[in-house]
Length: 259
Image (cartoon, rainbow, N blue to C red):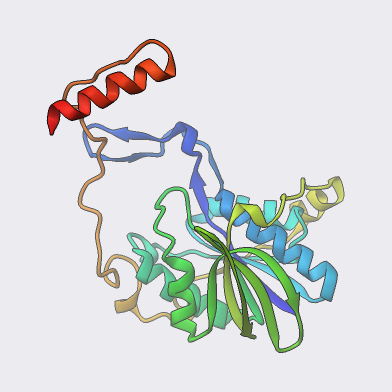
């Protein structure tokens, strides 16, 4: 089985700050990591390869330094890494990103199964996975918590729902986005780290993947972020004390006062 796992390098959420002058995320001095949800997609891809055979290719769109997360993925069991990097991709929204990744998947020969994390922690849109499936005209399932069975032509999964889960079967080739409940990512082995250090990371430009200039980067993005800011605190705050029962009674009185 030919498996492609899409991963993203993101700033560590614990250290993200806003620049008060530009109202944008300040990445200076902030460590970059592999998107946590993508770790679970990677683990599922490698585990599936170990069960049914095949190859796992990790694919990332980003600046040259994103090569670090591709090597980390190879250390965890992926076979090869491909970095889609070009200044023309700058400013891409989820639509342009999905288009670019779709062209990259086609450029590397396609895939029987594409795995993505549910969402990235820097944007939290959860749109790129479904968008990629749309661009490739493939069936997809989001929020997968378990792969039940996989055959040559189909895959059966559990999709997490608010009140439990759905069992969904879809034909291959397909795309899945996964949640953290699906597995526990492995720790890179020493052998894996040595392999990753020596691995050649293939870099693809916009021309390499045959991307149309009007569909990528800022030009190909229907949406643009005008401003990012932290909401200013406002209004009164009340702190209730006492036992839980006493606090509930105080809260009820407070609410009734506004009715």
